[in-house]
Length: 127
Ligand SMILES: [Zn+2]
Image (cartoon, rainbow, N blue to C red):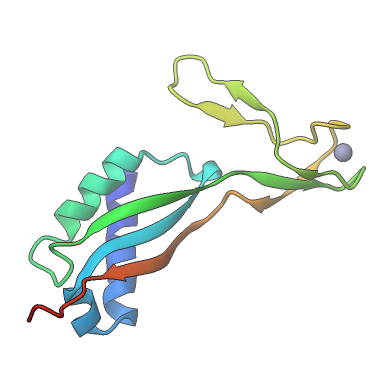
């Protein structure tokens, strides 16, 4: 499943870039998730739990911050959200990648995010 390779990548990035001592106390890993990614948060969460087993991140969990799609139009300079179409047979709406004002071609400004934002680190005053 796609979510597993993404979870593994996130975990590897964390282990590479964050001090091990901080990771050991990490409670929540906050991840920005762009709307265009169309990933299952449930699948990503369980993939994260499995991927972090027997690592320093074993007791942490992942949480998501949604980033809505935002585009800018090359024709009329519209900047903002796009319309959504309910996809038949699917449980989500697919964003329509054209300008809601003039139907022109758009450039994606936001919505492709998949990045670790912050870690919530446990307070270890009780130690
Ligand atoms: Zn436009």
